[in-house]
Length: 255
Image (cartoon, rainbow, N blue to C red; front, side):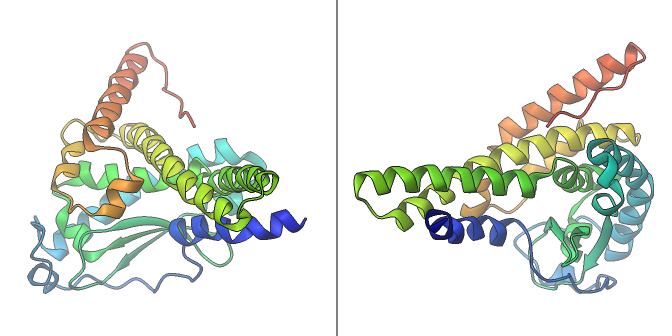
């Protein structure tokens, strides 16, 4: 019990990195001035067109995601599959989309206004939205918590046996596990998100190239697979989806 309390702070690293503890702000319509305040990326369209695309894609993709979510969570589907979609007006920030939770545990997808303007068409919008939905359907927060806690406890036990710093060993193990499982879950979300968008009638063939236009950062590269690996995974899943479709079958989500 003492050992578990020592490694608990390490688990909080994952929680802080993967979800927010507060409910996101209410939806606000993007401002037309956003394009002037994000010079580091090329914004492809007006805020009005971006919001219209977001609304169109959400309407088609949400029923598909809910059905897939219910199939994964079954008896707990009501609480787990009530997706809430929010747009944040954040002038001056780079394009961003993320999956988080409300204080009550409701899954929330948050797009900032720059992301709506950054994505060029409905296919790109569906790829990003499907990816974020897949994080919830894949139960990535809970799975990550379990794996990070397991890694932290194992390292803490080894450090205690060797007479080392238990807390330091636990935190280091948690940080390493966070990076490892973040990359794994990002690939899972890419693959499952591709299936979701294709089930909704969108095509990923060119949409995946949006990765090459995203602004880069050290934190993104630490926690995401390399772009060629992600693009290869998406193309492989798209090929499998079409092959299954030609046989009159549906490609299942795999987590």
